[in-house]
Length: 222
Image 1 (cartoon, helix red, strand yellow):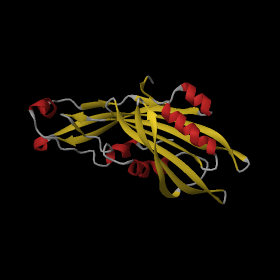
Image 2 (cartoon, rainbow, N blue to C red):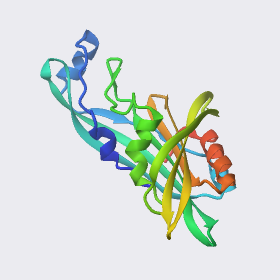
Image 3 (tube, rainbow, N blue to C red):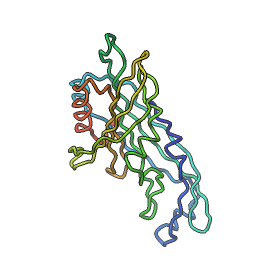
Image 4 (tube, one colour):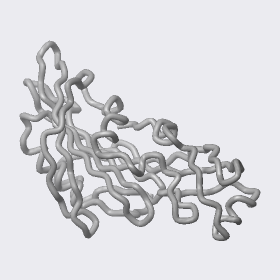
């Protein structure tokens, strides 16, 4: 599952801050502003129990120009972490890479008490819209994605809202339903996004995705 990290910062990465004594160093500094996220990931035990395999763990540094008070521009560097897990499932008589889970951590980009993170105010529905076309699987593109319900899970020591979405896709001429579960929240200065997807008929995978979410740790070493 590869998210376009450039798209993460592309929408509204220019922020305007109120000029205060506390941010003079930011305005007058010569070097780039540095923002590093801590990696978020489910525990190894939860991954093994759910039958998933680690597919990719990577970080990438994005460079953007941000506008500060008085029209001053500064370079900003943001390091984003992504941890991806996939699972081969039996469906329609074949074994396919049909389930996936990803954890993404994006730095809050706080300057003088305000955030330059363009995704910080987006709802789970809006986040899913941005990431929908990047989910890996053996089926085709998802369509008709709708929000089904919201529920709570205990993740990283607090109650978090998880949204369930359902869409349809073509699998070798047969239309099947795909479920997606997504939660996003701030933790330790980062915006975390946890997303799982699987065929709706595979009801056991629904519980697996929730267990992966509940086991999430942040920050973890790479």
